[in-house]
Image (tube, rainbow, N blue to C red):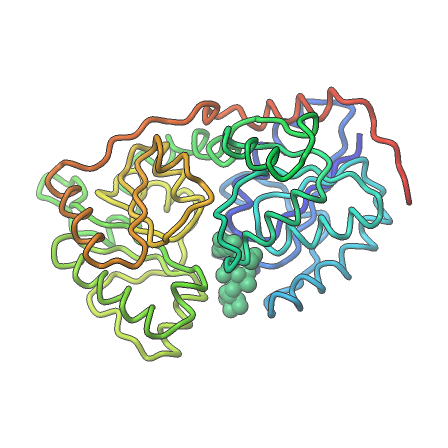
Length: 372
Ligand code: UD1
């Protein structure tokens, strides 16, 4: 079986790693890794490959940045010949980024089977580019691997036949489980240099912040107000803020003041995981971090009005605070007095999702090639 994996952006490197590893166990599987180049900086891409032990991509499409239409179209144009040449039995796509939807479109039109890893998530907010990507990809995919029951329900409601849906659990948590011991080993260098330490050497309390959603960072008024809230948080709790390049650029373009916040470059996976596991609280608008904090039992305050990962709210540690400064203050006070929401880990978020997925893939009869 010839499997082609397509990744391109930071959150999906953590998702492909366990699937690559699990499929390696099958002698009859040949794997090809394509990087679209959607994320291209060393600290947004290369360092993740290194830490996660992902082999260098067989093909790099080097598309870089652009508007959504340009980036998506560029990926489609550069990917089509690769798919035609490699003739995969199935192409696996991950998450909800532009690389995911572009690949699904190319493969669906060539009649090549597509498997969507992390299918079925819905925020029900079509102003989010990722929601459009999720909806289209799931309609086009032949196999849909979901992380939780809500994913199955969403897909069924959208008319996807049950036999295409496989609940395998959360592949991103597989990477977390594998690398948490090294992340926790000692104080990471980052921690020592970014947070004050107590006399006994233990890290002081801190809030770990990430922010990159267009809805939060692309409007100067909104970003200004969020930074002001974070400066308020910083009075009670050191704010450590590894900033996405998009966010850093906007802060500079809008000439905003991040004041005393400890703004850092994006961090490598293991370093970020170490910081996350020890944080007093995480404040974020990321999707994956809502899941990781739920697994780690760390309180998470999400600067969004909705989430495509509702299980992190219903049984995890996540609280949606939107852009309501009062709610952020209130929830932060609860954390500081030890009354943060306690969560549990969702079923199948156990470090073995990649293995379940590989078993399903390999156990199926070989797909019939249609158009190529
Ligand atoms: C993308 C995903 C988002 C995911 C996020 C994680 C889409 C629609 N969005 O958003 O779902 O949560 O990645 O990071 O696919 N840039 C760099 N260096 C890089 C990559 C990006 O400087 O290595 C800058 C560029 O200025 C670019 C901007 O970041 O214009 C945005 O990058 P892009 O990939 O378009 O979207 P993200 O905001 O990263």
